[in-house]
Image (cartoon, rainbow, N blue to C red; front, top):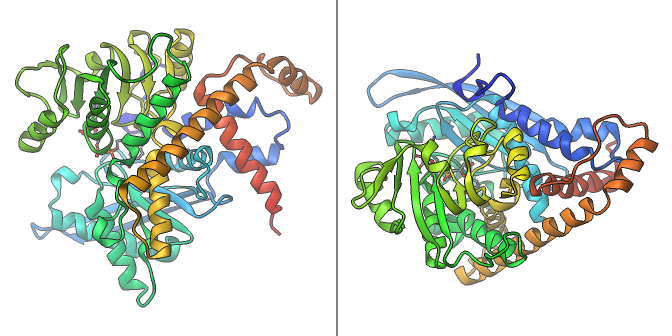
Length: 454
Ligand code: NAD
């Protein structure tokens, strides 16, 4: 069955997220002529995909069946790591794509985890809290020992939060009594082993990455977010906190949106007022002093920085020409399609790719896991400082790598020819392709260093 998300926007564009992830991988692999063909196959596909089906008895006395997935893409650099998403449009291929992006993200950030992801096809807006607790507990029980503190470690994603993580921890702990199980899941409430700063980490990491890229001169005339105009699509964990943190650094938030639509005020929107309004009315739409805009209109607003923080495939071949932002900082996973990437690159719009820009979440998840293993709790300042170092280092590494690749296109092309590799001539790389190359090189190197089992 093809879901709405997988329907091509135009006959030319395939919006299946896993096909997109594979295209991105294949595109980057062309810049690594010495990557062994078997390794390419191994790194392109997930290591394991688990599908479970289970019923729960709902609050209204019905029995409802649910389908859940947990995918491990790669474990070479460490245990699987990745969020769990609750959404009616979850598909197996979406979970596969998100798991692979986690592998590359952990590698770009040099966090010692592999890539994994989970999802349950359900609409949390139509379920009671009690239903959601039962769905979570049953899903985790069905996964059994497929997850664990040293094998595969879930975290929050779309429509899951610290409370969901507490249920996951509790379920797993009930099944494995008498040992420290805190590391089985991250993004927990702070009083159950969660890390200070984890809730804000994705957005804070995105801010650190943007600041560093600007400081390094990716946008002539704009050396920091101070005074920049910012548009945010999606007003959940990633988007709302990004709006708050960018505004705190002096940026002007001119538009924000959620699944019900967007709001715009060229003089600036108070992010906390928008959040309060959303809490009261379930949407940012209708905030006094703002004009309503559709999500399509919001993406096309003139601004310095656009932060997609909702779902995949928002910036596509059919709307990339309308984007008027100068820089896109991808807080969401997979918001930009390969066709859009090409258009944006040609138009000189800088994209800070998801596997770099939103990696603050998994980085502080890693810090949480370390604290859990050490029975420690770090101060928030310490967490943020370490996050800053990691984000800055990764951003610098990607920017330097882009220069390196684009400065050696002739040699790479000659190497491809020598090896008899087919395909169009190599073009200069954007930052997504660069981050992929960096990530794949690291995973490939560790695979060979470890030696292929047996
Ligand atoms: P969330 O559920 O907290 O928020 C999602 C937001 O997007 C909601 O406000 C929702 O209304 C909005 N939305 C949904 N469809 C939309 C649409 N078509 N147009 C505009 N808004 C829409 O989820 P989140 O945790 O903030 O995740 C958002 C994105 O960030 C996802 O791509 C996720 O994978 C990514 N991400 C999240 C984390 C994390 O730590 N939470 C880490 C890395 C990446």
